[in-house]
Amino acid sequence: MKKYILAVIISINLILLVGVNSCVPSQTSEDVEILPADRLVKRLEANRRKIRAFEGNGTIDLKAQGFDNSASFRVVMVKPDSIYFTVLGPFGIELAQIVVTKNEFYFYETLSNTVYQGGLNDEILQSIFKVNISFNDLIDALVGAVNLTDNLYKAPTTYQVVYDKYLLSYNDSTRNVVSNYRVDIRDLGITNYVVRDFKGKTLLEGEYSKFNILDGVAIPYKILVSNKKDNQTINITYKNVTVNTRNIFIDFRLPADATVIQW
Image 1 (cartoon, helix red, strand yellow):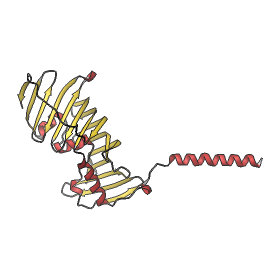
Image 2: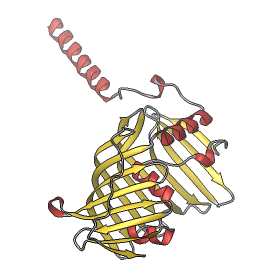
Image 3: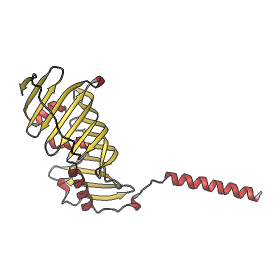
Image 4: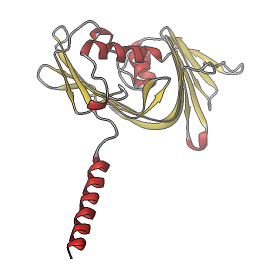
């Protein structure tokens, strides 16, 4: 009887031990080097700048006032100033090709064989992508990056490590906003950032998930950027992503028989 009871106790202990171990993450903050704030921000910004060429395909959902549409797409981005989009409809039918740089744009409607082209500004950029976003912010949004250049030489207002995340915040008195960042300790991917005014109202928010390490950088395959002030969102889900390879380039040629309209 004693042997039976002992066997039961051992079995229960083993079950509990396995259960506890299965709930423990493979890596916690105790297993990695905890970076001071200045080194962390420099690493994050270095990773952002490391992505010089980017290619991905998946789905994009754009929402703005009076507009809500989603499509399959392919994007090629070559820094510092070139973005190429192919928008696909049902059954993979090409609907449009879009090329934008800091100075000009080309919008080719495949079905009508018409090219719209002209100089680029914020108004035209918003007309194309339906959201209020600058060219540089668009590049970062497509890659799932956050520009921390302004914080490289500033001490954060708050900085702490909570389990497996770095939490940083910066008060900007010139813009009257507070920016908060949540960073994964293990792969240094920014999983969330929020910009609020001093009254606590959310102005801008980004959420990033489903990371994959490409060329040493954590790249999110799921990107959600929300402009709360203007009620606009960009929601991207990538199926495939390639970065920093020689075969990433923009190959856009105007069809010889296309109608060209200067905008």
